[in-house]
Length: 216
Image (cartoon, rainbow, N blue to C red):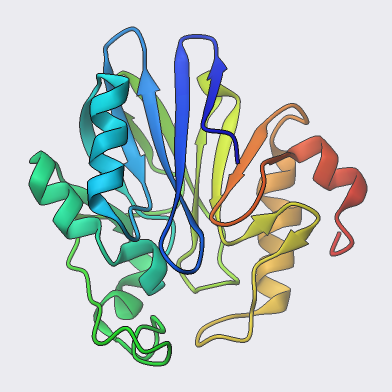
């Protein structure tokens, strides 16, 4: 994952955090000098250092899904910055269940999250001067949500879509048929030049996945 990507006046910065290699992103609107943080799973000090380095005012934390490696430090990061946490409504059970969100299974204790706002499918958020489309993409979790920002030509797919692969579906609430449906019928409707920023691993594009993803 590159440290920075510039498309128009939107800059996308990222860090790989924690022992599972979770991708955390800062999406900054260069015009307003504001931004959003996506999936601050671990290492809040590094995440806040990224925000300071880029010189932007973070306005919200967005969660793609409620597995512990994506939510563990969401509240700590948000409270330190004085901003709200927004998360998909359909993953609410996972946020409060340390077994379903895998924190107990993986030996990370009891990780839970109470978000400030729950998000529904097809909501359009207007934060930091950005228009953010909330796309429900279940399969890895029941409430997995991808965030599409048309002006950046970017979608943040969480653990739904990876470079030439898809997220695991053998965890509680997972479904292979659901994740394939989410990719085929939701993400593949986006333009081919849309960059895909996944929850783990390297960047890709919708066009590349349309031609090369074996699950499609």
